[in-house]
Structures are given as C-alpha cells and as structure tokens.
Image (tube, rainbow, N blue to C red):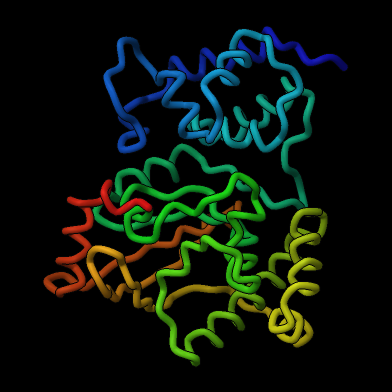
Length: 284
C-alpha cells in the first residue's frame, strides 16, 4: 500500500498546533507567535532537522522510519492510540506483543518536565536512554549518539564506548560488580518479557561477543530487576555529589524512570539546587 503523505503531513501539523507548550516546558526556547509548538521545537525534541520535519508536514517526504515516528510521537506528546495511528498512516506496524515499547506517554513527559528539582531520566526495558529532563542532563551530561545502540547504558558500560554519561559515576570495585550483576540479570528478564524484540536479541549477542565479563554473567542465568541504588557522581563544576538513585517502572510499558535525590538540608541537596541554577552551563 502507498503511504498517503498528504494525510500524514496534515495530521502531524494538526498535532503540532494543538500541543500544549506549557507541558513541553523546559524543552522550549524563544518566543512563539502561534498556539502549539514551533517546527524548531518539535525538531529539537525529536532529534530531527527542521528541513526534514517541514518536508514531512508538507507531504514531500515519504517512508519515515519507525525510529523517526517514535521520536515524533514523543516530541508531540501523543497518546498510545495516536502513536499507533501515526504508524498506520505511514504503513508501519507499531510495537506489539513481545517487542519493547519505548513510547513515552504525555503523562510521563509532564512528570519528567515538572520534576524540575530532581534529575529524572527515562530508559526503556533494554536500558536504552529515551529522554531526560534539564537537570538530569546538567548532572550526567547528554547521552550522545543518534542510534539506540549508542544510547544503551549496558552497551556503553560493558564495552567502554565513549562518551558514556555513566562515566561521571564513581564506583568501588564492589559497587561495580553489583551494578554489572544487576544490569545483566535485568536484561535477561527483558529477554523473557520481549522474546520477539530483534534489537534486544542483537544487543545480547553483541555484548556476549564483545565483553567477556558480560558473557560470564550472562551464563549464570540470573534474573532480577534493578531498583534502588546510591551513586557518587564526579561533576565537572560541583565536584563530588552523592545521591539516592531510585528506578521506577511504568506499568504496562516497562519504561524506567531513574530519579536522583538528596536528603533535605544536606550538602548534596544544596549542590543539586545550585546545579538547577547553573544547569545550562553544565551540559557537556
């Protein structure tokens, strides 16, 4: 079947016009002359060029990939039903049973944007970075890389692929061993929940081939879920800051919200508050 590029473009434009700029909050910059989000806003949030988004909206770009549609659904704060409709317009099958769904619902987006006093990041079930609020980026740095593999925490950690946002975390030998064990056990749990996910299968194969440590831990067949941790972070401007790290799972999608916090009145809480002030200058 042929993609109706005009209908796809009209729908994208309508969703952009109706989007709540206040919900997008800290992700926006500059003045808006009309309701909704500017093309520049959506392109930046989706990691696309403005020119490509313009061609999509004008019906001059055909066959957008599933990765592009997923990014647009997140940038436009679409519901799951709307995300699925977007895929249907592009003649693509949305993520289904047995496949990891990295769609961030509007509610989760609002939560991460409005928790401005806490660093919050969203990862999928394979520990691929999906998004983070401004304070998380200021604390850990923006995980670079356009591909899912480049943004995968396990891949970066076990293969030493730079730059890794986890590079700011200071771990003792025991902490490192515990992190490795929990990460591998969590990934094994993901393979059981998402047996049809080709990207997850490829990740496990490549990790096994490229990391002896991962291969050894994978052979143990442990299954677990990562949850609470405490991290010491070496920040380039604030120095060392120690934070509680809680991992919250989103029911129905297995998205993970990683939330960092400090005890009220502590030195670490003061550093976190300071980071909120100097945040934009800390993004490297």
